[in-house]
Length: 233
Ligand code: MN
Image (cartoon, rainbow, N blue to C red; front, side, top):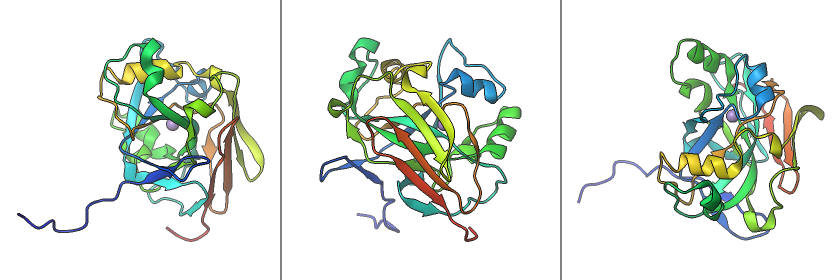
């Protein structure tokens, strides 16, 4: 048998609210443009024919409460507050009305973004990886089981920076709702336990600087918190 040359990469795991359980993270899918007002502020429209996605590495994940460095290669580092779906059962080509059975729970998440690199890539029809998928760019709060969460709709989703409200919407503002996203994605991937789906961000995205403190909340879920270090990255 061959020697493995170095330690295997570690997959992160996210705590489950109120339990001594950890949810191991496999893949991170992210929906692009799922709130009409956010699409508008980005100078585009929601494609109502079909959602689109990008992916982030599991290793980009850090837990809520972290203090992280301002990332390299950007001068326009943005927050995106999001409602996150955690898959709990295999799902492949599931219809919308059966999609909920694949869901383990929900959480608050931040899809941190190097906006200048993302927009440059978008303008050149290049991949978004450099703008989206980089170290410490995915922040997760503990996951609440779906059985402990109310019917999705009127819950408020908000983000404060240094105590000032920057994003505010409701979950029923989602263009594609939760079962529609899970069903659609399951026609392209064999979804598995450990797959997270970030469902997109509301309007009000903006830049952060060293020293900023972020707090995101969704009614009924644990808050997500992040601080940007004053130290050089
Ligand atoms: Mn996003």
